[in-house]
Image (cartoon, rainbow, N blue to C red):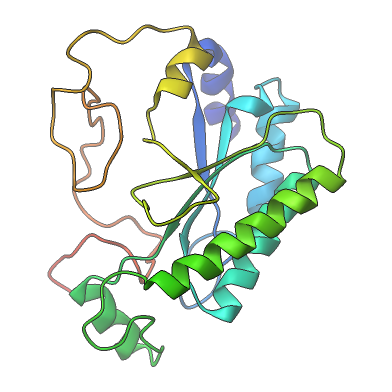
Length: 223
């Protein structure tokens, strides 16, 4: 995070909610060009120390890999940020597209859902739920007065997370905005998405970014 980014964030602070994707896999084979957890937490903390409200920063542990190691990694990320006072989290469980499975196999990594599996089993979702329940106990033990929100994105099988869109009613309330009558009838949504349908995609870079994450949904000519 550059100083120019922080300056822009502070300039438009009243209009923003920041989502910071931090999975705990930075500088590993899964996320080769992503900063480490320590570096990422330092960057996000710097935004708060500069004056941005911590309640409007969403720590996205996204995706969670539903193995014993993956669930422990997600728990470590969540509790690490809880200790720093961050109170809003967004989780999802990894989707294994065919091109993602091919990347995993090429790197010698096991396939989370087998040769043809795309999404988690009921048992795997229960294991993630158990981890989230444990994280809530950890938060309560901190005696933090902030409201804890653990949200999920397109994961209706999770019971310990609030199912809501990345742009949700809660976000509108935080920003003091009102939705128009057409808010949930416009736009295109993928199956299971609960996001505000009138959202607009501002990114023009229609390709994979330089982070090189193996689980990236984007498929290009190298896959």
